[in-house]
Structures are given as structure tokens and as C-alpha cells.
Image (cartoon, rainbow, N blue to C red; front, side, top):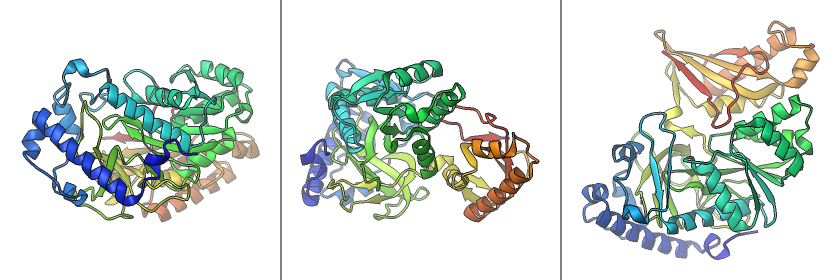
Length: 431
């Protein structure tokens, strides 16, 4: 099922004409109303979409430098909602919305939810945080637009989640993958059975996650897991989402124009090449952004999908350009480690990378928990048990082959890796 057939199946030429018209209007709007854009862009005009590559980028630091309202393109009184990041790396980045912006957000979220198989009347358990974080309200508003029944539980309070999931028997759950796994694990510890909750769909995002985590979620809950992508600077969740073929995430590119650039040089890359995702808002009025560097590493394709949608698709996020670790001269993404670890059925989907930079050459330790089946076979956890020791050697060897880096791999006791009620903390750096 397609939510908006006209927009989502538009012919290629018509889509490009619409994108060009909207990017030209966005440039006029931003330059006329925001000093930051006027100083950078002047009287710039573009005659075709390829000309966009000549324009400068917007970086997250620009949003922080103009905190809180320096990038507003409308009077403050026309802003009907404000979201913001956590600000863990400095001042938070602010996202402001007009009433029209919120309507676009509901529209693109409705598309993403419908593409994943959500339907009117489905009961949706939302375990994303509400408040300044865009996750909870983004899913909430989009689900109501579809006609779903929303249970706005928010994150945290694991016991309440268990109660409501068991009593309400929802059709779908929306959460970070790590929190969903935490809910399943703790439910099982209290005698519950995640596969008996009746969940049909899992709608996950807000952190990079691999097919190994997808398999773990689907095996644990008995659902189909879908990736929904977004970022608050652009709109929130709903920028892109997987359809039921799960062959990439469909970008709502009539509202958000994607590019891929080299993360180092910033040079534009062709379709199919891996690089950093850059987005331009095409219809946002409160805080338009032109060529915003997301920091997310992916690839793009414009080939039509088997589902009938014709929008550009992005591969699932490999990681963030600023999350890439350089250890002994080797570039490593946490997702590469995750993919290798979770290919081993004996390991649990709970791991952490500890980077020690206190020595001349950085040292990487990978800590991972054993799966419950392995613990049962071994009669409990002992790091020196022959089967666990053999698994440790095998996992370390496979990581070396996958990354080209010799790592210190430690299989730790169950429940040793900290669980998260929000985004999982996968990397710890010690200096």
C-alpha cells in the first residue's frame, strides 16, 4: 500500500522539475529572510539540480553558532513548535516548525509508516522519548495521520512498558533497536514471552543498526523490523523509510533533496558510491537548510523500487563520519564490528568498543556478551570454559579478517554491557 500515490510514484522527469522549482524557491526564501544564508549565497541562482553542488555546505556547527533563533526564516510568532538536540557536545541544535512544516512532517511520517505495513486501526506502542527529542512526537503525529491508535508510552520505565505491551497486545512498536532489545530481555527475565506480545511490525531508528540486530529483533519478537531515518535538523523521523521489500530506504525527495559527497573533500559522488549524505529542505519554511551535511555514511540509488515507488533510496546508515574510529592507522566503523559479531549465533546483540588512546598506538578492545543458549550449554558463564574460549578466538579472528585490525576481544558475563533507554552507547574512548 502507498500512502500518497501521486507523490511517491511520480515519473522521474516530473520529480526533477518539482525538485528544481522547490529548491529555487527555497533559495529565494532563505536568502531573503536569513542573514546567514544571504551572506553565504548572495544572489545565487541555479538553472538545474546539478548546480546545487556549487553552493557551500551548512554544518551542525552553524546551527550551534546561531543558537537559538538566528536561522529562523519566519517571525518567532509564526513558530508553533520547537525541538532541540540533547546538547551533549555543546549547545543544542534547535529545530523550529511552522504549522505548515508540521503538516509536511505528518505527511512524510505517514508515508514511512504505510510503506512499512502500518494500517489504519493498528495499535502502535511508542517507546521513543517525547519532549525536545523529535522521535516520540514524530511517530505520534504520523501514526494519527494514518489513523493508527497511539499509545504514547515514551522511553524509560521498563516495568510500565512490560505491563502495557502484555495487556494491550499492540500491532506495532516504535523504539530504538537497543531499547527494544532491552525490553525483550528484561521481559523474559520476569517470565514474559516477547513472541507472545502479538507484535507484527517493529519501527526502529535513531541509531545505526545492522541486519544482525534486525535478525535479533525479528527472532526475539516474531515481527518484521523496518528502518525509519530522520534527523531533527531536517524535520525529525520520516526523512526516509523502508518499504516492505526492504531494499533501501525511500527518501521523501519531494521535500528533502539528497546528495552524496566525499566525507573528506566534499566533492559530489555519483549514484552508487558510498559517502556522506547531504540534504536540502525543499518545503521547510521556519528553518530551511541548504546542503546540510548530515555526517551519515550511506549510498544512493535512483532506480525504481519493486514496490512501485520512484523516489531516491538510500542504503541503511553504515555509521557517522565522526564516529569512524582510527586505530593503528585502520579506519573502523562500529557497524562493521556489529555486523561481524552478530553473524555468530552464539553471541548476544550487546557489545561495546573500548578505545584506549593512553598509549602511543591506540588499542581497541571489543566487549561482547554470550547468548543464552551458549550459557545454558556451558552450565553458566565462565570465561575459561573451553567453548567460550574457542568462541572468543573465532570471533577475534573474524573481526581481524573483516576490519584488517587485530583487536582484543573479551566475552563478558551476561548483563555486563550497560543497557540504554535511549540511543545505545557503543563506543567508549579513554585518553
